Image (tube, rainbow, N blue to C red):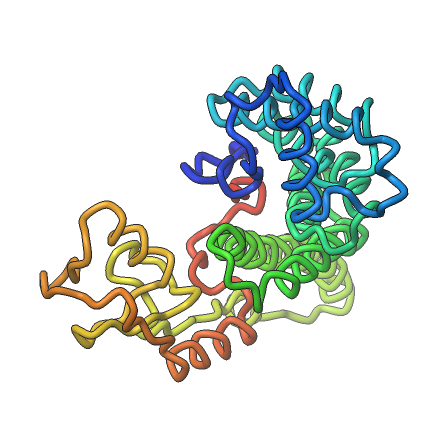
Length: 331
């Protein structure tokens, strides 16, 4: 089995939130507590006015959450889990506490714990898109770890796909940059999950064909018939050829674009990729070196529709080189 933990450089940044800096973990004054409560209210971390009586616990739990986020950022995942656990013990009604701890558990390959935390986050807040993403992703990873293949395994993988589709629907219209980064990861894992189901079905078909072939061979031998197995095998193992237009691929990443975006140089890039280029190198077209107006980015709707059509038809387009479903690396 391949390495199921992602090496994506931004995954910890995307899957956890950083509303407070680590230096604010220790709150000395009542005024500081009021500031945190006010910030928490804006982020819906205080679900109802009746919870004001839990204010001291909530303030302290927010400190532990911020501490956990800091540990995630510096890749001390066990300490992050300890901090999130302390936050949950003080106030267990915040969905983000559980989804953040789920991230840390996943990064340590503690998939069962990650799955439980993601599910608890969903039970608290069904609109927690990160929790749906994590829950669906861990289900797909567990499918990879199962020793044998069956139709039941495909059904389990489809549950993971359903969770990722829920996450995708929730972030679809969100313009928040953090959500846009999450959208990229969701789309990647959706494609990989669909490819995985396709490959599992192929393995099941091969196994069934071998059984059927042996049965037919026995029957043919008894009745003195002959089958042209070469011709039959060619029909059975005919590959699906996906013609992927070059314009569907981002010139920066060489991967199929999630959000094709037209810039004033006339070229189209994936939105996330070109924005990263702007941050690193300034507002220049990486291909032509022309100056770019950052406010002039336009969604390439026709190209987006073309990409969506081919994705709906094949599901896994962009990762069709994967041959072994256990080797697929999920984000």
